[in-house]
Image 1 (cartoon, helix red, strand yellow):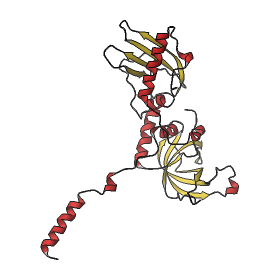
Image 2 (cartoon, rainbow, N blue to C red):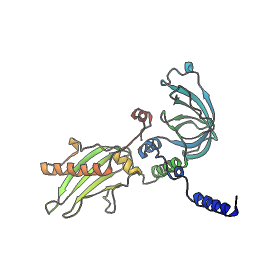
Image 3 (cartoon, one colour):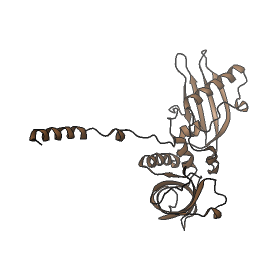
Image 4 (cartoon, rainbow, N blue to C red):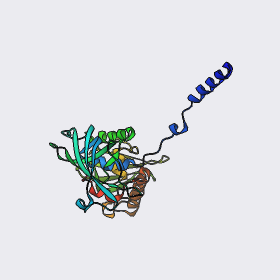
Length: 287
């Protein structure tokens, strides 16, 4: 090939190399939503990044309670990193999991693969753990690892948002000018820690609302950002409308305004989207 042609080929190759392949510039969205990972994280005293060392198939005759179209495995895994767990976990942990068969009825090959496991530590001494839910072993990736670590940091923080169990009472106070006023909604929590929502109406301004995590309404409080622990506590566990027995106002106008303001909060929070089967959440520990 002539020298000039070689130079042209080299230039073209260099130009092509500067452009990443299309497949490298696109990413597949994680099917697990923030609420899915939060459900698992808040209910699991032990969260670890592991590598499967042994995946021993259990004879179906010895696992009569396994769900249909699944293969039960006895797992031995090495701990790569402990993400959550007081007292730590041993280098090797063991647990049982039922994994779905593929469309041809074949069991998945999981040996040497990396996973995030969400579990209850049954015996710290020998490393036996119990998964928090049937699907509490999820494929590991750097992105998932960071998402779970971010959630755990919020969970263990001293000022962590508590689990919401209901609404204790709500009321609306009209302002001195027509159209102005304030609605307060006081929430019930599992821990008993105070949580309240305040919705303010000011003439000529959009309504604003905020959440306070103390007995005193914090003037600097704001509405929570989506995909944070506080957002999850509210969006996923608040009732869609104010319960009748929670509204303490005596006038029909105030009662109606309290409902309208509460509906604004629910609308702003948006839907709590989950992709995991609802029945799997029944296995989780109380939050």
